[in-house]
Length: 470
Image 1 (cartoon, rainbow, N blue to C red):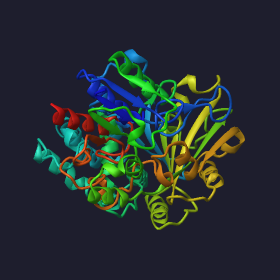
Image 2 (cartoon, rainbow, N blue to C red):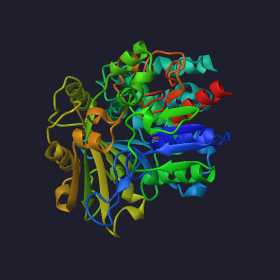
Image 3 (cartoon, one colour):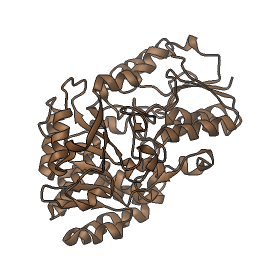
């Protein structure tokens, strides 16, 4: 056996596909009954309502340099694009709105339109030059340092600092919601980087799509393509040590640093193992899925057409909620990410009915039930929402970790994103994927470029192994 991959999330499957394309024999071993990791879909509420278990909206999927070079459509993956990428509603019924291109977005922003063009226009044009550097390990020098420098000087700014250039509360709030994907206080450095990366990915990929039939379709397409290359997948086999695996030239671990220590700690140099044991996990998600009798009655017209809706109110309100979470407090009005997959994907719910996917940010390991607070936020911006609920499924941080061991304490991002850990993952090394002195590579979201369904962590880990193995 040339390669064994532990874990069948998009990154594990990406590593397997990459080495299989080079003729390697490869086996993927998955603990759960189905493949997918963070890209799974199940009937969590009622029969006929298909809910994404974790990841639901995929800006990184459509824009992924790895995915776009694979024949995934031939293996069943179809991207569906909502008319509006993101809406960020305010109490007066207006909203900050993000469309799939710079010009349409700017035209809808009123007096902030020219400012948006000046910020995003040049970077959108430069994106093809810098995507490889942004989506790769920081240890590699950029191929286009000037373009990368222009991106970096803005990405390093706190979101609240860059937001000062916007004059309208709608665009400032939109920027805050985009930056809140970093799971950090918006006053912290690099939070603008999250907003820039997600916006540019949407522009590059043609929007923030959903996968027809559910996020499971992404994993299923990768698995189907892997099998067409001769790869094998074994489900229902939990790996607790390297002794559980067949001998192989390379072992890829699509697991958290904690999981890697549990499986291969006795093979690791002691200093490296200590670094993995000290790896920090960040804020958690508290997730609720609803089955609805009709579409969400947003007061904002744009929100009714948006695949993704950010709830939190003004920039100041979003910033306050994220400060609370970072300080270990549960916010009274949490920041929420809401996915409306069923507005573009009729396979998600029975005719005339809808699914609604959402999570809010809470401290790692939080055991507070946030369901009422989340429904209050929905009622705030969509009065009458509760009248549409016919079933719901609640998943606490502990539930998320029980379903996927990589989500330590409910952290779905693969680790804290503050300080150097946002780019130095999981430890400071020239090759961040290879366990030094071994034939083991880490390829989970705890390696560069981090969280999201894009496959780049697995692809880059596999390229590292291919270079070393010739």
